[in-house]
Length: 206
Image (tube, rainbow, N blue to C red):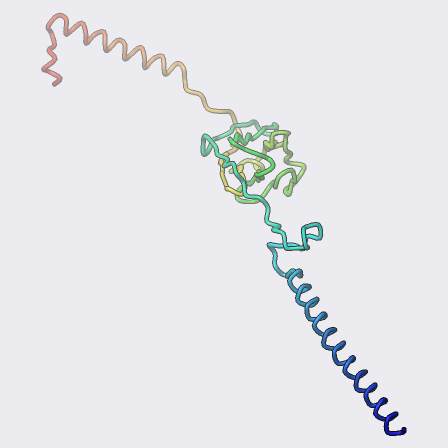
């Protein structure tokens, strides 16, 4: 009777041990599968081009690069000179073509030093400001503000150079032009007269 009881206890212990072994194997398998799936969903936080988008399906990595510009800005002239009186206020125009504020950024420079980036004034704000069209307004023309400027459209780096000069724009001397025109007309009249009277011949000149 005692032998039968011992055999029954041994069988129960063996069954219990077998159950624990099977449970441990299944548990390890489930944990390994969960770890593998978790690794597939994780992202590398050091990758600058991607971010972990919780709203995306299965939390997969979504690109974070900004869209590339689809319009290429340009200028019809590469440079120009602007004249202004001392202590006056003058506007330096940036006549860029095919400009889209959602894709491009206008940056103003003076002697290769940054004055503005977009709407932000990074130079002396008492000397400059921007109008609604991103043109640079020089509030006080002086020896300090005169010089070489450039309007650059990023990221394409389309650029127009502007030279600001203190003084009035030079104009041609009208009197000198009139005298030159009169002299040329008189010379032509005399030449035609000499040819008509046979005093001069064309083969004299050719």
